[in-house]
Image (cartoon, rainbow, N blue to C red; front, side, top):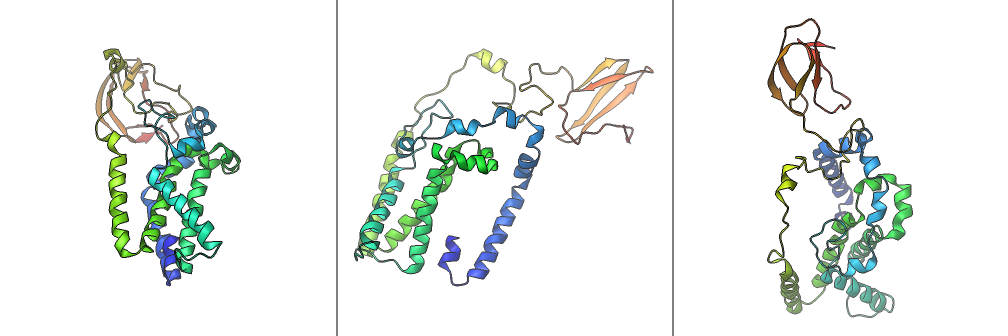
Length: 289
């Protein structure tokens, strides 16, 4: 939208923007399509539920919150000192320049549209991280799939960057370079606490021995036909329940498991240790059961 506002060839730029969005959604479809349409087959709604409401942030933590090693709900979600400074400066200009027709700084109509949109976009992102936005999540339930409201930070920090660029552009060249290098120096200085590792996490050996072998810590991706966490790792991928069978594991991919099975008895029962999910089919000698 910012590009559309900034150009005279709005129709062409809009077409390019729509094409870019479609390509972006297409390239990421392998993730969001199953997440959107197949989550009903997983424990996501049971595990997560309305959990997003537990992770709303207070406004004070968006202004300042120290870093922590504990994890979700403990690490910093502050927008940033420079970002808040830019928003404060723009608010000051809107009040004392636009409303009172002061001449400290001038914006043309095009710049004013872009800056106003960025300013509004910033506060919308901030709003969506606060408890007061709960009714919006209840109306547009798809937003609950964000899991954590602080993910709006990725959008909130973009607007101050756009606004800062326009503020510097309207400043005389003599001072603009000073401001740029000053901001770069402050940005580097503010990261000083992250220049070295503060601490390490140590776990006893039993923690790794009993590790489930998965990065899924909450079990929301487990199929609804299963328990939340795997209690026992199977001894074999294809297990013999009844009968005399020789099994050779040929190949195993995410969507295809192949075995060579030599049956020596009339009646055989086998158990394939794979969690059921719609779409699985069994074939014997090429014939679907």
